[in-house]
Length: 244
Image (cartoon, rainbow, N blue to C red; front, side, top):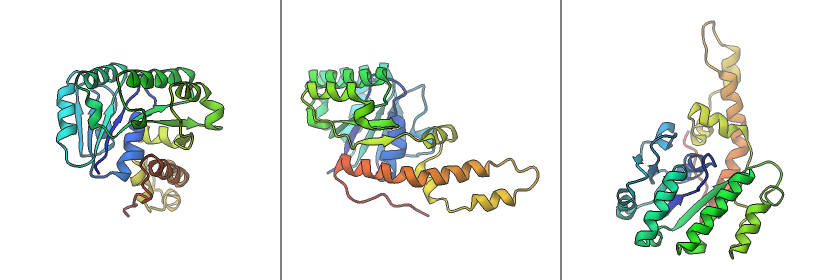
C-alpha cells in the first residue's frame, strides 16, 4: 500500500523539512515530494530532484497531486499560514481520507509543544482519524517524558497514546546539514578519508575537510536513530540502503 504522508504543524521551524529530507526521503527514494512553501528551504534545496513547490493557497493543486500519484507521496507543509490553509482545504472536502499518516513534529520548547497540541486538536476537531496522527519528538537532550510533559499530557487528554519512541535526539549534525544543504544518506555513503585529506591539504585548498570528517562521524550515531523512528512509524523493518 502506498504511503500518503503529510507533515503539519502550526509552529514554524519545528523540523518538518528535516524529517522530509533526513528521515523520510532516505527510506522512500521514489516518493513524490510536494513542498507547500514558497519562502523557506525545501527538499529541493537539498538536491532532491523529485520535489515540487506548491503554494499554500492552492490546496486543490496539491491535493490533486496527492490523489493522482500511484506511489508514495510526502507533503511537507511549510509555516503557520500554509498549515492553516492546508487544514482548511482538507476540512472543506473531507480530504484526510486519502492521507495515510499525518506527522506532527515538535521540539522541547514550550511554544513548540503548544503549537503541536493546537495542530492535533484542530485536526481532531476537523474529523481526522486520531490513529493517522503521529507525533515525532525532535531535539531531545534528556528524555521525552522529562522534556515533553506538556505535549504528552495534552495528547492523552485528547484520547491519544503518544509513542515515546518516536524520538529523534538532539545533534548538531542536523544544523550542519541544514547549513551545508547535505543529506545524511549522502554523508553515510561517502567513504572519503577526510582525515588523510586534511593532512595532505595543499596551500590554497579552502575545503573544510575537518568539518566533513566531523559530519561523517556524527552521522554514524544519528543514522540508526532515524532508521529506528522510520521503522516504528510505518512498521517497516527494512533499513534504508546506503548506496556507495
